[in-house]
Length: 475
Image 1: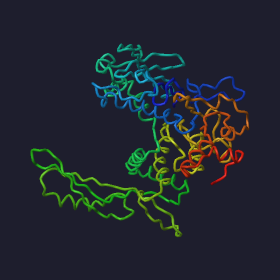
Image 2: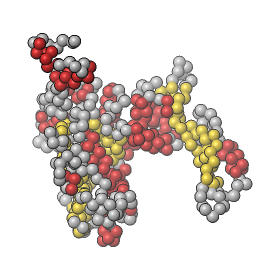
Image 3: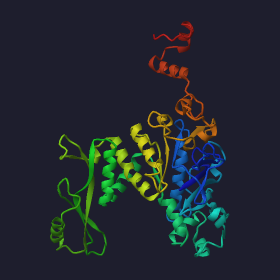
Image 4: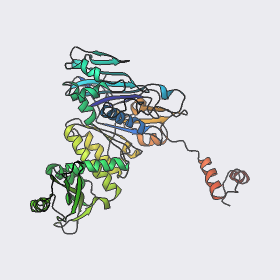
């Protein structure tokens, strides 16, 4: 479970900012209770703010930490600069260090992991644990020097020698199957799941979903999620519509070649008939080299009809953006709830009805449904989540965050809890009135001036308003 995230010098974030999922004390509590040796955490965090205020920068920084762990050892160029995204709107930040740090719990133990990246080397990296609430150093790295705690078993010195100046030690340790650190690496790279609204990310999630659809239980659960969304759908199927035969010829080149067979297996068959596969193997049996048959598949969504016993399959490519968006999230939601993951979603309201987005928030907040402490972090512009129209107390004060961008372009992140809103206060109205900041400042007079110049190039708006006592009259 994620407790806190700190970041500095990343995209629009210059100074250190902290997103805390530690629950604020409830009325009557001196401090939030401790659960399993760690402070109680909220299940949901919503980030509001104007366009270009840095909402995406906050959550993309978490994603950067994940990608850095996955790629620093195997993919980052040993001779090149570290691929980071420092603050660019001054003359010195691009050469300053970038900070990424997480507090989280694994198997009931609280950990703190972080690193600082320079232009071409890892300046610092650390991992601490807090068994029974007391700090224990697992490893500490500063300016190329490593220090290991006594409790960290494994080939630590050997792993340190394998670690390049521009690679993360935790990445190298996981690649070396370090007994204790691999579990931490796996949590950070697998249990923190990032999903943005871009086309490429959506396609990637749908590809992941297609691969999981071979599991009948998972396929059933996805069908249920589609029905719950009231999209006019009654189910989902994976249909194999072609077989690819890959053979390795006997030539010395060692190259492989593919032969694709378009095969109609019917709308309701999720696997090619064995007879068809065997027939193709027999057909290709006389060709020298090994033959491997694989099937290409596509997702079909089943639409309801007037007859409850009849449904009509439609390819996913012909569905609306809203249906595709919900389906691409549905599988990740199921996995997050089932395995205790943290799902991080950029623009949760993109292509989704507010009621559907509110249902998603409710799923994570309901402790009877979300028994493993799964979390949802998302950015949004939908102020209806702040009110009571969709559901009373959908978001609590410690679950709402705001981003604001200063005149110098730097992002500031702060919590609604800092304003201590009264019980029953209309937070939605207060936000729209500017009580909490994080609103775009739009000069209506300048908008009129711009549009008047576009529509009537020779028209003098200021003179028109002067002539008519401040009242605009259309020419």
